[in-house]
Length: 135
Image (cartoon, rainbow, N blue to C red; front, side, top):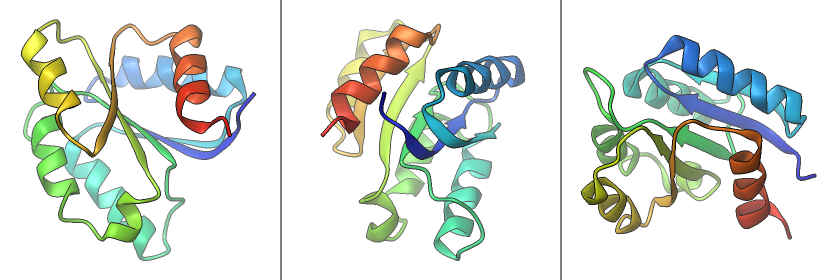
């Protein structure tokens, strides 16, 4: 089993974050699991990591449909972060969106490694870890 130092979950739904964090902890695949309930909080966390105040995630699961700053707006701001942050992070969209345009848009963005439909489960988590982190 692949083990990461830190996984960041960005989703406005607190119960979803709770369940996904629990799933990741039960899988034993990360030392730290950080949850943020908005795109702004996620960006603030990444900036704090760059300043040495947090653990930089190796993997981010990002929701698309969030109020204030949605996943696409998050990505617009994410692109402005220092390259040293972006180069260390793998970003996967995790969404309820069934709109094929969202999947196409995500696939066209070099910052986005994958697009997964909710609900998130152990099989999906294993697939992401095997596909992107197994050497």
